[in-house]
Image 1 (spheres, one colour):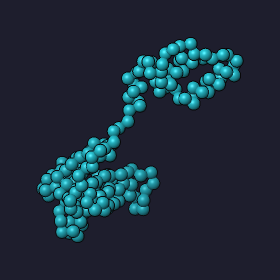
Image 2 (cartoon, rainbow, N blue to C red; image 1 turned 30 degrees about the vertical axis):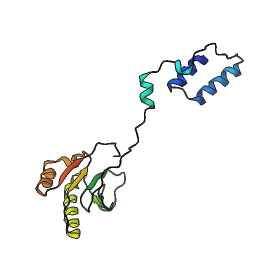
Image 3 (spheres, one colour; image 1 turned 30 degrees about the horizontal axis):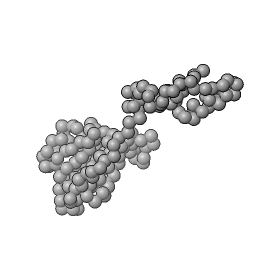
Image 4 (cartoon, one colour; image 1 turned 120 degrees about the vertical axis):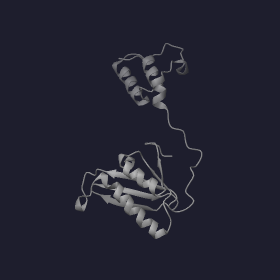
Amino acid sequence: MATISDMLQQQHEGTRSVADMMMSLEEIHMVGKVATVKTRQKVDDLPTRESCLEGKMTKRLFRTKGTRAIECLGLMHTDVCGLMSIQARDGYEYFITFTDDYSRFGYVYLMRHKSDAFDSFKAFKAKVEKQLEKHIKILRSDRGGEYLSREFQQYLIDNGIISQFYALGTPQ
């Protein structure tokens, strides 16, 4: 059984919750033992472990806002989602999204295979450029393999579209 000093040390390190510590203290009391702390050591004086601090770290808030596109099709965000656990009609197991940064209008295309992303992008590009009479300037995506193929990248270069990638797991 842990001593009260051990429990305080573990609580300070973040490896023992206050509720867990209270239950342990109740167990000590129920056994009939007198629990006293015979130390003048303050919690702040206890050694701090680096791994405990890393576990308690949080990401800093973003103080500045990112720049937004100033016109439709100026910046398009895209992502492929799937493999879905349940197939849609006609065997669709993936979908690709295209979101305009300026208007926040989104488009969704269903796909049977992840490799259909390039064909879906070409269909999307033809449709929106004809409707809006503007051209896509920047395509921003994660580093998914569907966007990194030579054929896809060459198509973007040939059509004057800048390809941008963002780091996975970051909301900015």
